[in-house]
Image (cartoon, rainbow, N blue to C red; front, top):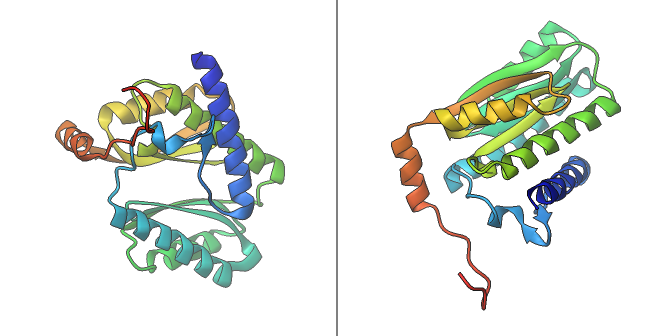
Length: 216
């Protein structure tokens, strides 16, 4: 049963990631239910989540306007810490991208992981989407992790893990990710929480509503 759910989750996540990369975001469904109903809520405040969305949109717009085809990039913001991944043609372009993003409103810090090399191929990017799907499905399958506590970004087989997590969760997620086929390296960009903070968030987190007529 666990293996079947893992396979279903991986299929749904991978399909969603592929579609989202082409057309924008929409809710992820697994077996007719939103994944959000199966896992804990995002550990960022609602304000921080909105800020992160705004940072990603403004950063991407400014990079496209300033860099054009000289840069293939992905911008991921978590709790106002921005991860830049992709490829730049020159070291100067890589540095310019970081400077542009660092000046976007509300950005706390920038982790610049852009590689100076030719742009990745469509096949490589598809492989990266598949790896991200495998990692997320494995987090869902794990009994001691909450997938919504993490952001997973994959670039050329390098997996970047972000999130507000405890040290134990960070180590466990890293261990799982390293076992995934195709993963070349794992880079951790975490906000480490104390156990006290984690317990407080768990107490404050709203519980998913139960459909009418469903037994507890």
